[in-house]
Structures are given as C-alpha cells and as structure tokens.
Image (cartoon, rainbow, N blue to C red; front, side):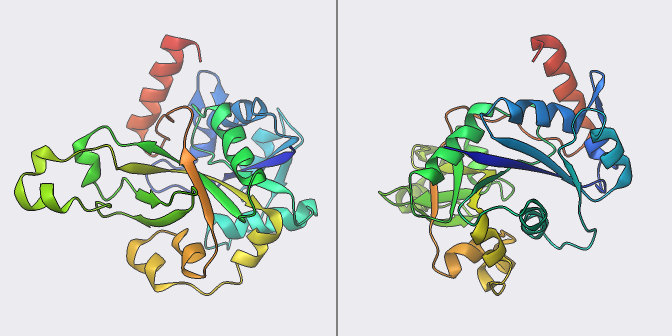
Amino acid sequence: MEFVVVIPARFASTRLPGKPLADICGKPMVQHVYEKACLSGASQVVIATDHQKVFDAVSLFTSDVLMTREDHHSGTERLAEVVDLLDLDSNTIVVNVQGDEPLLAPENVSQVAALLNDSTAPMATLSVAIEERDDVFNPNAVKVVSDIDKNALYFSRANIPFDRSAMMDDKNRLDLAPFQRHVGIYAYRAGFIKQYTQLSVSPLELLESLEQLRVLYHGYKIKIEQAQITPHSGVDTPEDLAKVIAHIKSTNA
C-alpha cells in the first residue's frame, strides 16, 4: 500500500498567530508533525502552506513543501490544489494530517490509509471512545455513529446516539460505551478530493459546522474505525503549546 501525507500549514491563527512556526524544543511545530508523519510509512510527506515565512522555515528541513493560494475556504480546497500540483493519480490515497498536532501518532496515519485501501469508499477517518461524561455534552467534541460495516452514519456536536432511558431519568446513569468522538484525520482518494470541491454545500454541514457532512449528504461513504492509539490534543492556544512542550520534555517524545 502506498499513500501520500499532506500537512496543511496556514500561518494565520486567531488564538496563536504564526502557529506552524511556534518553537517546540528548538524546532518549529510543523517540523515535529512532519517528522512524525514520515514514520507512518508514507511514500511522500508534503507540507502545503500559504505563507512565505513558513515556506522558508520548512525548506530548511525538507524540499517537500508547496506554496498554495491564500483564498481557500477550507482545508479540502487546499488539498485539492496540492493534488493538482503533485499531479497525483485519481486512485492515490492522500492522508490529510493537521499541522498543529506535534504529538501525532504515526500508527494512526498508516491505520486510516489502510482502512481506505481495503474499501471502495472514497474517504476514511478515525474515532476514539469517549471516557468523560462531559465530552458527551461538549459541542466541541464531535460525536459519530457508524453501521456494522464501519460506515459513518452521522457526525454531530450533539450527544448521539441519544440514550432515551438515561436522559429521561438520570444522566448520571449514562452508559459511555456507545459514544465515539471523531478524530480529525482523513484519508481520501485523490480523485474524490477534487470531486468534493464540486459538491454543493449541504444544509447539514452549515447547521453543525462540520465539513464532512457534505460527503454523507451527497450519498458517499466514509469508512471509520477506532484509532489504534488515542491521539493527543492539537495546539490551538498558548496554553496548549505549553502543555505540548512540557510533555515532550518529560517524555523525550
């Protein structure tokens, strides 16, 4: 199985400006992500950025960096541009890894690629078991339900599946076993990435603010299974960054 990893690295960030270049133990954040992705078995790992400072910094440790347009409305649109720039075959598996996950588990990257490789679906992703009751009701923790064949049925910020008995009686009796939290790592077939950008925006994705719902709305399958390794949280704030630095120093990760 061959697959390509693409790491989008946008310079702009409301809560942490210049996030891809944030220093983590002597390396920019995006370099940590790149090095972890290289351990996944990918045939190529490419960083796609929209800013010259990021391009120059990345060029110091790899030549696999592309400058992309600034006017993309979503990460998938940026991914589609990368597919064109690399002239990838339509059947090539492309794994989209976020550039703000310096504690990325390489095993999860290879897992989602293999999940797609073993199916006819155009797209695959991962989930993890929810272990904290508060996450069931946290709209920032996206829940997902799937069918017996590992096809995602729906993604939502709401508490799905809805446990009618517990919710009507006593929320403290809520069984967490059925709940899965979506992990934002995706594998696509390169041809579908371009096809996705031609699909009309769905009312569901607007309601939930979840881009992947466009795929389900238009009748396509998304394969999903539980991640082999529970991912660490990404970096969105200076506080997140401090936690990652402390973790790396303590574990020499």
